[in-house]
Image (cartoon, rainbow, N blue to C red; front, top):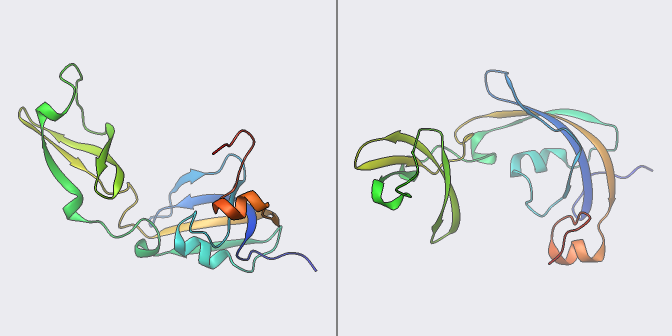
Length: 159
């Protein structure tokens, strides 16, 4: 009996990610490994991969709420220009990491004005329904260390 994707297994998979318009926006160059059931990938994708076997492929539609969340207008901020490095030319599309009460947040510059800069903390794909074409390439038992830490360890990974 071949193994299935289930909690506690380390699963390797390749994918093509498409947006709602059907445009390919990301393709895995190499299989991605994650530990199933640990919330290490978006919830809607993880849930629908359960039960697949090595070599199986599946097209999985994931609603925004089960992917990167709905777009949240409250994550759009006006930040005083003085909060950014003075020597840096700030342009739309730049990204910065900032600290919040909930931990680090990546923000994207949306608009630049003389006294303030509008940034957006939503993920680029927030509010979008996504489609993943996945192929399972491997399934293995997690090592004890991986189970203890709740994620896959690659070579050179150290705590």
